[in-house]
Image 1: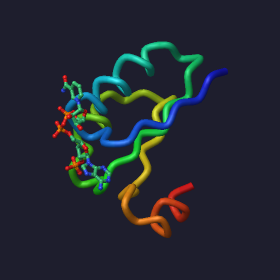
Image 2: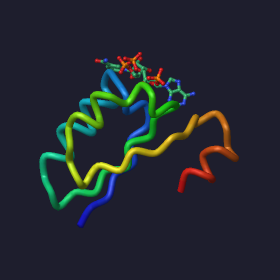
Image 3: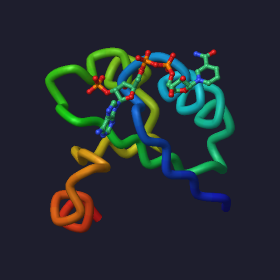
Image 4: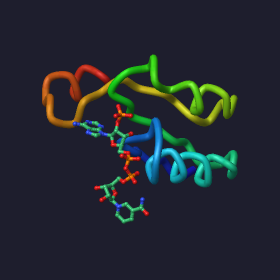
Length: 67
Ligand SMILES: NC(=O)c1ccc[n+]([C@@H]2O[C@H](COP(=O)([O-])OP(=O)(O)OC[C@H]3O[C@@H](n4cnc5c(N)ncnc54)[C@H](OP(=O)(O)O)[C@@H]3O)[C@@H](O)[C@H]2O)c1
């Protein structure tokens, strides 16, 4: 059961990585966003193997707190 952590997951190339990886229900995908308020498209995917986490990768403490 592979696991993936994708940053910048709310839009752009990050969102598409999450979208494509999570089509395989065997994959667990951790989707990191700076704010859940901008994660509408991720939520709309409605995939139980996608776990949305709030984290700014420039904030070490915030990143640790998200795990
Ligand atoms: N698009 C392509 O085809 C392509 C090809 C090769 C390389 N790249 C590179 O890949 C990167 C992303 O491209 P993109 O087109 O997907 O850009 P984008 O649509 O502007 O998306 C950037 C993503 O990065 C997130 N982000 C920015 N700063 C962050 C931080 N400090 N902590 C956590 N997340 C942060 C943004 O989050 P928010 O939603 O919260 O703003 C957003 O989700 C860029 O460096 C680009 O040069 C892109």
